[in-house]
Amino acid sequence: MNRQPTDPTSAISNRVRIERESRGWSLSDLAERSGVSKAMISKIERDETSPSATILGRLSGAFGLQLSMLLALSEQTGERLCRAADQPVWQDPETGYTRRAVSPRVGGMLELIEVTLPGGERVSYPSSAFAFLYQQVWVRSGKLIFEEGELTHELHAGDCLQLGPPAPCTFVNPGTKPCVYVVALVRR
Image 1 (cartoon, rainbow, N blue to C red):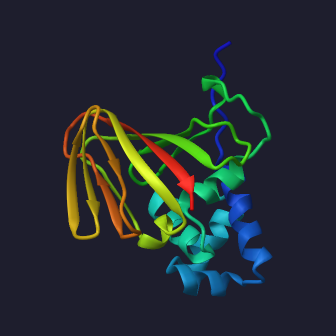
Image 2: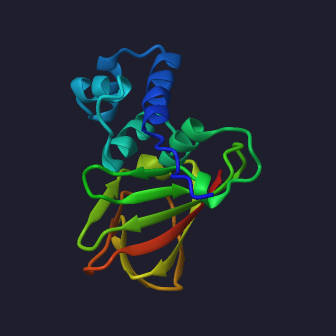
């Protein structure tokens, strides 16, 4: 059976609203805490636009959640088996980067994410997006430049990097072909 993975954009929109409302925050409160405009947050919550990875990173940081946790909360189903055809795939409308949630969506401690970063693209996250987890990046194909605060790591197929303390991070594909990497996350 070849089913297309479910697009999680609506679930993400709903989760952002749930996180904001559960804290008793107005749209203005979240905008001030995240640096994302009130209008953009409103469009996201109404499922009128798909937020970019950068915007989701800012919102998750404002909530005190890592980006992966925000996305995982929106994807939970309780299933222990997640077949490839059922793995949610989210695409960043800004860069074309795709994020496949490989792990079953039961809310476990370990999470595996497969990312495909198109050639010539870069995605940046604030340090707050990494504050509550241990993370490793394993490059499956292509080349990845990973900027971690003041450090720059050049990763090739097969290389695996364990991230250090939370710092602003940028994933860069300097090539022309997509770079595919797996991110393994464990909550602190």
